[in-house]
Image (cartoon, rainbow, N blue to C red; front, side, top):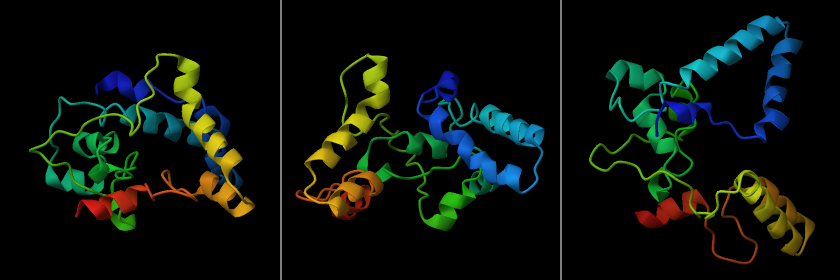
Amino acid sequence: MHYSTALRQSWLELLFKDAFYIPMALLGFHPLMILTLHQLNLIYQFLPHTETIKRMPRWYEFIFNSPAHHRVHHSSEVRYLDKNYAGILILWDRIFGTFIDEDEKAFPVYGITKNIHTNNLLKITFHEVAAIWQDVKRAPDITSKLNYIFQSPGWSHDGEDQRAKTLQKNLK
């Protein structure tokens, strides 16, 4: 992971990301202020996307997202799944119970839980959407169909629970 990783953005983000700024505009924030803060957030993302910086000062890592915290976010290891969502403030992860510190003795393994074995950009972008669609099609009822859309990844109406929280409980 290096600084250019921060520049990689999903094409699908274009469909929904800006919708999160609408409430700010409705509250009266000037569009230029919203755009400026959005750009500052993107600039900040260069810091967490590096392996060069191992640790930041303790006070900093208590409040802000650091490279060590963000490496955890990009890990495919069960113990790190669904952890450290922070963009800038790691405090939110601490408050909502999604924070885990990086084990300094074992560097995180980057990736996704099921490799897709392709370099095709369309397949890379839409593989999970296609997988969810296949699950929805095979679901027997409307509740199961909705669960495939809104539950955590790994939920299944007919199989073993492969959600991160379940897998993490089984590690202990």
